[in-house]
Image (cartoon, rainbow, N blue to C red):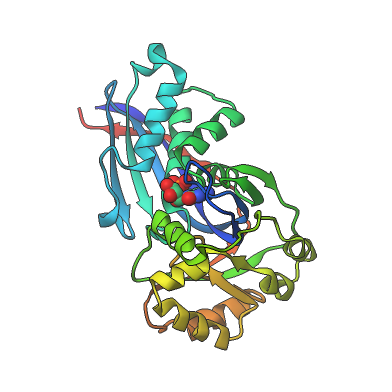
Length: 316
Ligand code: C5P
């Protein structure tokens, strides 16, 4: 009988309270002004040592079958990027096996893949005793995807640039969300392309953070926050999945504090007045067409955290 170190990191999903999208730059990416909030719906990534140069993963939980387990997996890419950053001398001696437990919808606009990448960075950094500082991890995260740095940070934060230049936002209290997870998915690049198509020939303003939204966050008033929620990608997501329009009508008829498509969709994030109201909205919207799962989650919650650090006994 032997033993192996295991590190488990929990990473939250996000909703964008605001997502303002500018015209695409020369590299194809769109400048953003966004306000992220991390919410209490989590993926977990467990890292164990593997032979040098080995990077493998397995995925369980919700939508697991639609997540690649080869080198396209964002968590595996994160582990490789971390080793590349520490140089060949250390890197050539290490390997990892990642077990990913999914709760966050896949391709749902809630940064599920980004959460796994952020969790893998922190898990491997801990497993391999690398001790990179926060800013090094955030830089690596930004190279993996626009939402990965926020997944490390958590809370509520303004994101500029590609959404990776983060500043924590002041806010008061907890916000109660009902998340309507679609039976389908949407690809982020396709949604950005659709937005460009819909806006072709129009002047697109520089994206700016809404002062009204920042004030609403500080006030702690859900009605004020609900009235300030806005997502430029919503129009594009609805254009690609017209049934979302009907769903949003049903949601507004149930009188939430506010609602919007989360990120590039198709998940719809519904803001409630309080916890009781969230429970009522979840019941009222449980049978809405095209909705696979109705979840409740509060935010803000912290970013990636090591939740278990132990030794697993393995066979002789
Ligand atoms: O950065 P992330 O991997 O989340 O982006 C996925 C895709 O979404 C990018 O390849 C790009 O097509 C699009 N995107 C964009 N502008 C951004 C963020 C993402 O065009 N600011």
